[in-house]
Length: 382
Image (cartoon, rainbow, N blue to C red; front, top):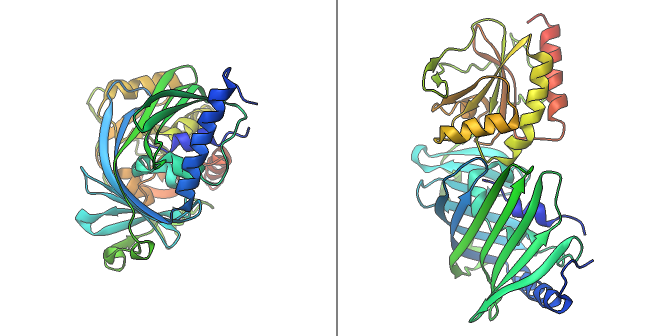
């Protein structure tokens, strides 16, 4: 899954569940020493391999990236995540998050602070352990154990209490007992008793640059800056000064046949990909709204990421999606929202392709936001 899932699971608020209290105490002690080590650092760099078996997929994805970061205590001030294979970069600088495409010398604004980090693919290269630094290890709802010791390295195994979405949650952390660096972290969890998720990160190089040397890159003021349109809140009806249009679509069905969207009425597009946790959370919300508004608004799911169509079909079946899901290679979500974050939601005027409303990312009030957009637009006579 392309999110910092371990982070969100480990912050479960929390009596020691392990049978062997002595072993558990030792495990907590090693974790605490490592936490304090990282807490004392103000900068670091590492090269990391990410190994993922995402939900609904059979293939395992292996990618690598270089990461440099600067922090104050547990707060990240700056980082650059540069993927080896694509050359794409995720930049956090001046309290803003950017997706950088060096090929077209453009940086796309993702949001302020780190609230939008979980919707970005490259965030999977950040060590989730870094998000545990502010709080001592919890002994509530966590079973602690030491799996094995080899040389100067040991593996801590943490079994976490189930959440509403995940069960059988196990986290492994491999720590160097001499320097207390984390060299390997992995997570296995089962989503809603349906599918098992695996995430692993293997760090093969550490270094510690001077914090003062970590600052905005030279391209920061040279590249084109692209900001999302202000469409995530109130509905903007036709006739405004900021009209935006989707342009041409190149869509296919899961069987590979060309598909043309309706030319009358309203169209709602739900952009998602398999293994995206925010997309998983959004799916039942969108299906509920489809049941309520499907007679007045045409719903379509759009997948622009996955190549394994059997995984897409599995997602559709297990999440109970009852409206058409189409495939595209056009990066339509970026055209609609000027954002590379998922999920993305767009309401269109079918006849013209004009974007009436959009929202990028999942939020707790997603249903209310979409319901408001539908109600307002339908009330205007569309």
